[in-house]
Image 1: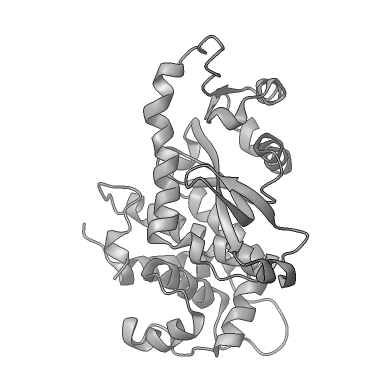
Image 2: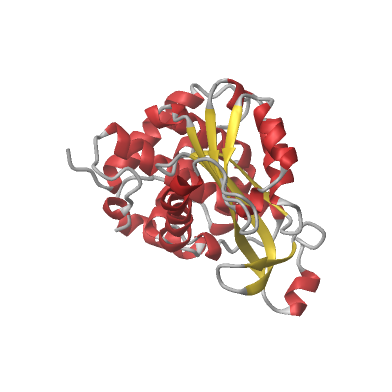
Length: 297
C-alpha cells in the first residue's frame, strides 16, 4: 500500500478526534478544533516550515481544502503553546497504538537543543535560569540551551522524553523521568536499556536492577569489558540515527522557541510528527518504519 501526506493527516485527524471525543466545555467552540490544530502542527513539522506565519500562508496551497479556517500567526502560536499537555498525551496515545510499544529493548541518549548563541541574547532570554551552557561532543563545541533526553525503541518510537539544563547529569535525568512514569518499566519485565558511557553509574545499575531491568553500556578503557559489550556498538548507532531524523528532517535545532513553554511545545510538535509517521508506516505496512520521505513534500 502506498501512502502520502494527505493519507497520514486524514488518519491522524480521525485518530485524534476519536481520542478527544465530543467537546464538553461550555462556551463558543473554537473555529479551529484541537484535532485540526494538532494535525496542522504535524503537517508543519513534516513539511519543514519553520516560520509559523509563513506556514499559515502556505497551507491553502499545500493542503487545499483541508482546513476551512486558519487563525492568525499569534493565535496559532498561542493555541499551540496552550496545547502542550495535549501534545504530550497524543505522543503516548499514538505510540501505544503500535506493536513497537511493547519492545523489550530501549535506547537512551541525549542531544543538545540550542536556544541562543550571542551573549546579549543569552542575557535577555526568558530561558535564563532554566537553560545553561553545555558541551556538545559531536560538534566539539559549547552551546547555550537545553538537552533533549530521549528514551525510544530501536525503531525510533519515542517512549518518554524530557528537556533539562545541560549541566544536570544524564543519569539523574533518566532516573527522574522513570520515577515520574513508573509504570513504563514495571509493565516490561526483562527490559534491556542500551546506553553510552555517559550512563556509567553503579547507582543507575542498582536503580534499574531493582525494577527488573538491565543496563547494557560500554565500560571505560581501563576496566574489564562488560558482558555483551561487543554487541552494543552497531545497536548504539540506532539512537544516533533517530536524532539525525529529528535534526535533519524535522529541524529540531531550528525550533525558534524563546520561552520554556514555547521550546517544549515545538520539541513536542516534532516528536509527535515522528511518532505519527512511525504509527502510520506501521499501520500501512511500509518497509521502513521511520521513513518520512513520503510526507515531506
